[in-house]
Length: 156
Image 1: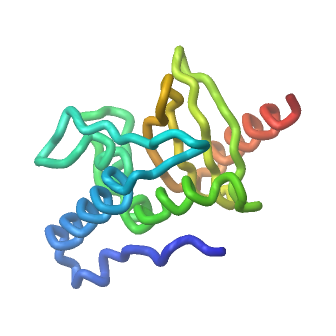
Image 2: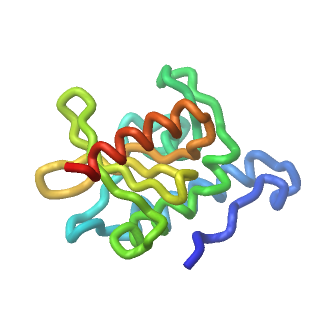
């Protein structure tokens, strides 16, 4: 079982506005309003603060950067937007999706890592999951850090 095909910018003839509109449509239809469920509880997306009419969660799925107001589009994230619901739906049964928890401050997160290539992060709430982010793991230092964290979690 493989993830959905990539949503390539080139397939939109280099028209960023058309591509970005399609990304937002996919986000709303296939993620935010799709009724996603993980481990029996709803997966929700953060809507506020909206920027340019787009939900806050949307921007975390298609942009990169540590400073919230200075994030930039990441084509690898954009291309894999349809992977987010696929990873969530298949995490429990797919042998190539690793799952573990970490804590950042007071936040408990569940990490879903597909083939050490694509990471989906869900924040645990009292009665639902919050889709925090998703991105490609391509930097060797980040991959090593995630492996170490995953392996330590799986030994418990």
